[in-house]
Amino acid sequence: MAVIGPLGRWPRWLLVVSTLALVILVGAADYLTGHELLFSTFYLVPVAMAAWLVGRAFAVLVAVLSVGAWVVGDLAAGAVFAHAFVPVWNAGIILAFYLVVVALLVQLRRTNLELEVRVRQRTMALTEEMVERERLEREVLDVGERERRRIGRDLHDSLGQLLTGTALAGQVLREKLTERAPDESRDAERVVRLVEEAIEMTRSLARGLDPVEVEGGGLAQGLRELAARTSELGQVRCDYVETAPVAIRDPVTATHLYRIAQEAITNAIKHGHASNVLLRLEREDGRVRLTIHDDGGGLPPGPRQRPGMGLRIMAHRAAVTGGTFEIHGEPGAGTTVRCEVPDA
Image (cartoon, rainbow, N blue to C red; front, side, top):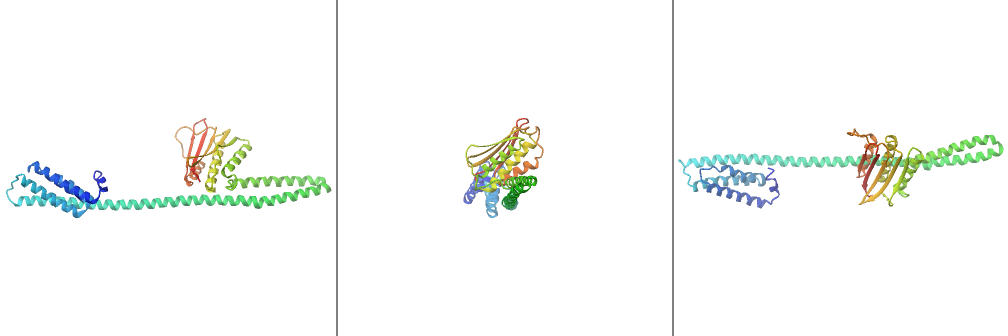
């Protein structure tokens, strides 16, 4: 079947002509080799072709023609039978055998077609399920990111403004107490400092929940601020490098890339014990590439165990944006995390 499979792409008329020509060719060979050599088996080739590629009715016709060619060839080659019933009997037996082969092949072909249809239907169903699953996963992540951005903006706009107003009121109170009760004014000053620290903490939380502003500097500005805040913590030196301005209009993709960078920096500090981390954002051949390289301990040697939650989340974020995720590292040579997404 693998041999005659490519013939299925031929036009129907060409299959019919080819099958009949093959019957004639086998019949000619049967006649030329004489009646003593049995050639009935070779007629199965055109019979099988007709049954598999054309249909039952044409296969029956080819079977009858094959038996006729076999009988006529033997008679023309000088075959002599003791009784006229002998060639009729032989022809009937051979024809019955051919018809059984035709029935089996037709049924097998029908079963094969049904299986192909079922496989295609199941493949389409699985493809639709995978597409729907990816859509739902992306939607879940998008909903989570939107909720984070909403909370971040509420912190900045509502709580931040309330704390700012409280700090201003505290400053006014401190000025009044400075004139009337200098000792109590120091307590008011401490309250103002605490409120100002709360304001800065609120702003920091808001930036962490809503790090990428498409209308502002976008992802590049978010990564630049992330590198600056990481360096301010004093544990590592984190630098952001941008060879050319890279603007990503899709806020969801930009946020996913930011979270990947955030997680990679956390891993570099927590697991790699790195001293330096470098963030790089570039555009090339219609794709945006984010690279995070550190000089930490790298990945452990030997077969990799099941990746941790952080790596799986980074890979998943890259996948839902239609991108690719790679991580490379050698012991003592640091680790490189690379994510490429379509330019959006």
